[in-house]
Amino acid sequence: MTLLTVDDLVVEHRTPGRPVVRAVAGASLSVAAGEVVGLVGESGCGKSTLARAVCGIGRPASGTIAFQGRPVAPLGLRRRDRSLTGIQMVFQDPYASLNPRRRVGDQIADGLRAAADASTTPADLLDRVGLPREFATRYPHEFSGGQRQRIAIARALAARPSLLIGDEPISALDASAQAQVARLMRDLAVESGAGLLFISHDLSVVRLIADRIAVMYLGKIVEIGRTDEVWADPRHPYTRALLGAIPAPDGAGVLPAELPGDVPDPAAPPRGCRFHPRCPKVMDVCREREPEFGPVACWLHEPA
Image (cartoon, rainbow, N blue to C red; front, side, top):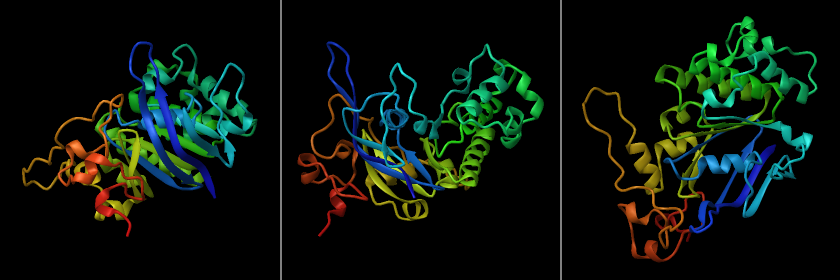
């Protein structure tokens, strides 16, 4: 069953006196129940903006977002529809996402009340994420970054989500905790039958947990497919460049390939294919026309 459907989503940022920034420029993807989809790309490509729109934080300029067949309305001053509490997000910075003035058990209990779950306690959820039950009486400043992120995961799980979103949830953690937290999110989501949209710029971690990978560049999805297939045979030049930039722990001492140039300004994207100024396979058509076909948006794979 498809939980989340994002269709041709456009999200713009407007500042008086400055050009409109189209952070998401027509992106489409889906997440099914029990599925883990990894959304990857360089910083500034629009991954987090897409995630915030899915949660209702931010108003799309156009396109649609549907959760369990119902449109996702942007958050306003009123309490959001109870059906949308099935979408929960784990944010990037565990130091900022928890209230420092409240015990972690009380913060987890907020989610339990939203789900009307009287059979589970905050201590039960701490136990599920691998933390001692007695931590429920402590405050966030008493924990390490990895522990705080586990607490944030427990708080998200308390609302019994059908869709869990991780917005760069491991980037603020040290290397030893990153894979642990990523696997924990996958295991807990799949165990409960929920879908997981996991956003990261670390492809090596996404490879460990994702069933499918969606590659995003300058506001658009340029390639999407099963993780093993994308990893074994990346078709878009940008995907190949991302994989080529991953260090190989083979002892050969060879540095990974560096992707030339920087992500263009989303307020003034290049004409034609957005990747063509950095692409080693650029053709004349790339400079003039933007490819729209999928699952690979590249003129090298134009349908017959």
